[in-house]
Amino acid sequence: SSSSSSSSSSSIAPTARIYTDLFMPTLKKIINDTKKIDWSSDSEQLRLIVTLFRRSAHVIHKHLPVVLPLMRECCGDVDNSPQTRIGMLSLLLQLVERSNTSEWHRYAANLTEKVVLPNMVWRNGDTAATIRLTAIRILDRVMTSVDADCREDIARKLSKALVTLETCLDESDTRIRMLMARVFEALLSCCSSDDNDLLIDELALSKLYPKLLDRLDDSDDEVRVAFASTLGALICRAFPPAESFDRTGQFFSYIVKHSLIHLDDSNEDVSNAIFKFLSDVAFYNPKVFSELVTRARTRHTTPERCDALLKCVENDT
Image 1 (cartoon, rainbow, N blue to C red):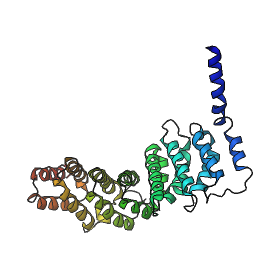
Image 2: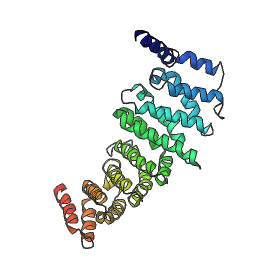
Image 3: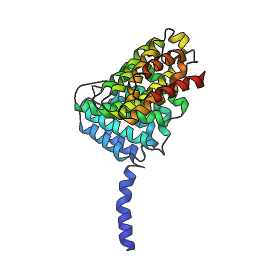
Image 4: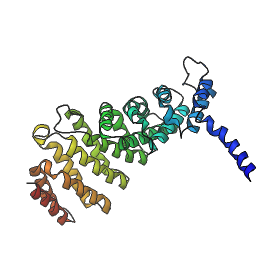
């Protein structure tokens, strides 16, 4: 029994050591003094690098100063080998999903800019769709894992890439649209209407809000519920005061009118989410809100919900 235990231990130990003590020597042997790795084609060298990283996932956080620059090299150029990029992005997703590992946090903003965002740009084909989904899953996880200061740094990177984020709102993959609801909510929650240095400027906001609002008409009810919450963050955190940003009430009126249509939705989860959203934003322009809800009351099958919304305004004023 003891000899079999010893034999088992000796057979396992060398394998474990390859991915702990011998990680760096193994990586150096694979790279083999190559001045510049060719990431463009699916070579044996690239497959070995990805395999080593994947098998070393449990200790990869100890080698981030070496691993992350290679990830940036590989994933930063969308013309590089798609299969290698999928391997690297999957590894990065595994890293950020490890709740007991926070060593990557200080690299999060740079990874978002150099690794995640380039791979969220739309390209045709199933492989490109897999790459986008993995990149967005990483971004969603990063935004919910890091501390407030780090999240704000990432939000500044995202605010400069709104066009890329917006294209993901129309993805055919429901999972991507759901993830984008959370990503946008996290981004918008970093905004402050009192800040002189607005995270998202007024012109960008005026272009963004109709695209978020369109998701209330999504084919998937869970996505619709998620975007109701996202729209709440948009108005409560990102919209500057109505007197400076929306003096005529045009933006707010458009949002409330469209949302009131869904207050009567046959799916109770959707109608409840819309009710909560409207309750939360009634303060933004009470006059416009009251007029629109009062007008809609006569057309609604549940006028008592409109009455409850009007009470929200009374309580806020």
